[in-house]
Image 1 (cartoon, one colour):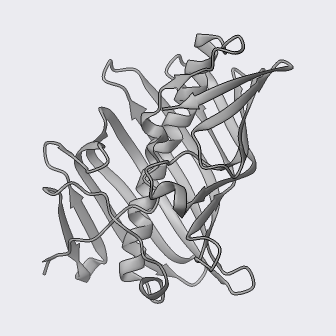
Image 2 (tube, rainbow, N blue to C red; image 1 turned 30 degrees about the vertical axis):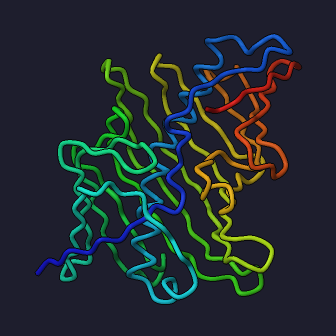
Length: 277
């Protein structure tokens, strides 16, 4: 049996997948090649981060307790078809040959989200991709989201995201790979702020030039609902360290909570401002 179920609003459709890097004119800009390498490292992870947003929304609908405390919203285009298959605990989102969401994201192909319960892992959500593209990038691999429970003291849900055999292919045929693990905390809204998401962990792979890269989140990447509801999907806080070709290191600092699209890149003792448009 299958039923139509028009929900699924990604909590955090991380639009860093579609960023363009630009720098202020007050200082020398970051060399273009370095800026491109940093951008691509972020783009590859962001392509898979979006899958978690769909899975989280699906979990809100299927999982006990979520629907009453979180108001996750959706950004699906009007022609996307969402089908729920209760007998095998799966959901299929079909974007067809291509459609654009209200926020301007172009998607095509299918997302297949399935659920399983495990006494060891808790509730597990697996996302796979069938000829799935986001703004021209083809996404392959598997993303699993492990639900670790609710922390009543901290007032947050715990998850862990894992990317297996991730691959992102550009229209020119070049591709990058990624595998990684990301513990996450999804905080309930309170009187002072709305939903907040904190992400830690790290990932690695090869970039489009065939160079190895890896990055670690040195300070949790933090997203605030008040920013994301305005269309700003850049982390408001957090620091990541990116290493390319084993020795070329950069840190990207997103600041201390301002709802903007700015960051500072530190490299070889110099700092460069970057704006994500």
